[in-house]
Image 1 (cartoon, one colour):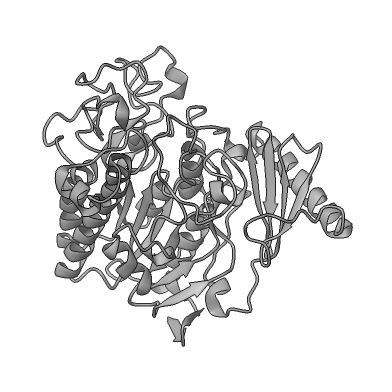
Image 2 (image 1 turned 90 degrees about the vertical axis):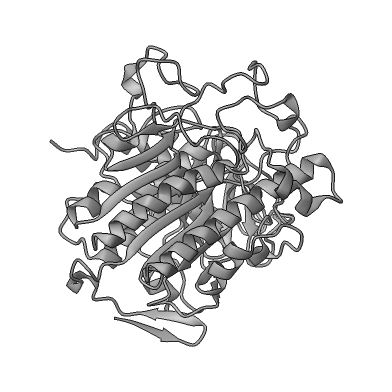
Length: 468
């Protein structure tokens, strides 16, 4: 059982006693390049996100929620493995792949009787080795072939990488940003694929978030009708470049520039589909026993990139590709109406790597031979009281950058650990005051912890954690 106390949550979990029809459904929703300040529940007063705000108010808003990396592919790996992407060889947005030895959340939940589906952006390996597709697919490197249907997902409607947020199969004009050398009006060069390895050719016009949700809804309908608990991983492309939207969504922001109309409108279009998802769950009487996590894969795109990005960090330092707060502190919340009484919020640092161990704990999968070590932790006990601390710090590596975030302090390096900066995030969330000289004992202890963690990740990437 889970006992609710005031605005916070005390968890007393005996989840392993669940019967199949009592197991909670799991939905992991992720936006793409959505900034910490781009949602109403984080204080944005312009972008209309009523569905997200309504969900957040029914659960726990994580004020210090972190993507595992400042770019997309690595963060996605952390969500379904519980391990930092540096540990498993996914270093950047178009590098590495999900190795077959990793035990994904989908594979584990299938063993518990869940039906599993992936919808939207995959970006953890190629989906074909026969035709040109996306950023890497079909270009002769079969070693990086690792589609979701070979990683535990039974139903798929997936792309290898980005697509335009409106008419996703068609290259938009250059004003949408990030179209490369593609010719406007031509096929964008990335396909939606099914779990059978087939290209989808129908219902691909209009809002990309709606196109994705059109595939999620029958998956959930079937699962609920068959009394099967389900895992639905919904990874929207919005608002990643190329970003554009339809006239009805642009009109919501008519007094702003065309750039802003498209960016804000695409987010509102995605929010509308999340509302559609909630309506479905309620109509099927499945909402109360469904856990929903929402976040973004990293902070908003940098302002220098083609001048097309309108995302907000709400003043946090840095943006996408940076391990400063603006690149990795992202919107995040968890809802579970049967067990969590909202509205509630938490200042405890939480990471996308925490999904995996938390869900395993909730669903009672205790005897599975998990891959160790996990970088995430079960967050249930942390949410019992505002006074609780995470304890285990969150490590980050991206290119030459590295960071370690604890309950109060953050260590940061931009040059492979040759020099460091130290910030008190509780009193200085905007990282304006470097304390590296004045707090030497704290810095020294964190440097040692970070170096040990990086060494552990290096060993894992060499294959230490895998057994026959």
